[in-house]
Length: 269
Image 1 (cartoon, rainbow, N blue to C red):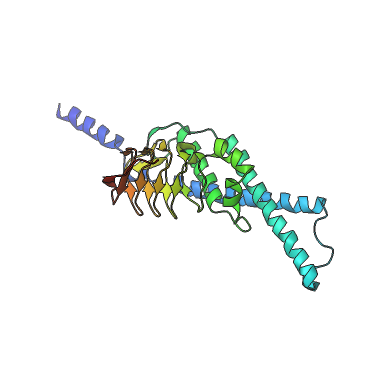
Image 2 (cartoon, rainbow, N blue to C red; image 1 turned 60 degrees about the vertical axis):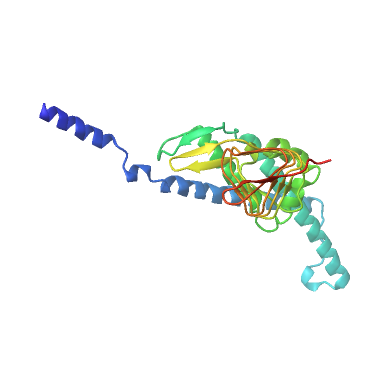
């Protein structure tokens, strides 16, 4: 009997996960390599198409810019401005096309298991890579924010790439999971604020939709985690951290770390 118990105990010990079996470095390194390849490919393709288009249109001035007087220098500057704009439009169009090729991951809780293959997390990782290319475009992609929020590209970005939004922004908000974020009308998001459609537990990733209704104000540097629902007319103070799955009622003002209700606001006329 003793031998039998000992063997069973040894077997259970062998089946337990060790720290090495949960090592996430290979997965993260693969993600970084994919990020490098994708961003370099998107940039180089946009650059090649822009150069080809300008060549086909014979849009470059005939004289070299290094030998230009002031009128020719102004002409070169104007053509370069059009080239940069074309590059940004093509760059954003590439993001839309690539987004169409990636399935939208389902909401849910997905355990962190090194070496496992979960399609939902694969799709989420690919969208994360695409989103990094969206928010950190290489030169000359400094107009990507403007192009994505102006017609006609905004009519494609919202329904296809996300977030589903009926608002426009004066500064660039960081929407980490645009496919899981919904924004109503007249939503104001302050500088360097972050809105996510996910959060991480110690042993799992959780993908959950974040909904922000009409006339909401989110202060600068605030963080909104996945699963949050913010009612119409509510306000989030600057620097606040709204924890996952928090429900904020209409016309409530929340602030602090973690965010809590501070007071009720008067209804909007």
